Amino acid sequence: DGLAEPLLQDDVDFDDAKVERVPDGLLRQNQEQRSVCIRGLRKVFKTTAEDKIAVDSLNLDLYEGQINVLLGHNGAGKSTTISMLTGLIPVTSGNAFVRGASITGNMAGVRESLGVCPQHDVLFPELTVAQHLRFFAALKGVPVNRVEDEVKKYIAEVGLVEKTHYRSTMLSGGQKRKLSVAIALIGGGRGGVF
Image (cartoon, rainbow, N blue to C red; front, side, top):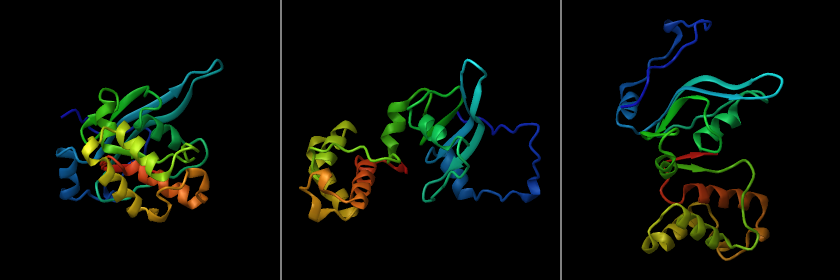
């Protein structure tokens, strides 16, 4: 199934008695390829002075129906991890599987299941709320006969019905974030990176 056993570094003090057992229902998500499984993910940036290890052998399982947060200080590798999961930068080694699709071999499959809402809004000033969603629905391969229903659904879900025909420049900061969330979710993404 392509999933490797978790890798533990020898220098990590690990006590099984202090680790909570993963419930069987969540483990089944891994077997049924309904989760995000990160195995030995590593990113090294080559510099002229010395190599910079940004992410060092990360192992993590993220399950359906849960909200997960990456916490860490500046430079801890949070953004780098998300950038690898979304295909913005290549991995140095290791792999991750999003609903069974490998980030090193099947980014198209990853993108079908994962919506991304970047830290900063990526909106086009000349497009309306509805036009943004139509555009991103087309990019994500939503069948033409379903686009308008999807657009209406996500505009309603994020509470922008009254702003449907407003250009993005006319939205407040909070409304722009709502539009970015709708963009991340349109097309049936099963998970979101926010």
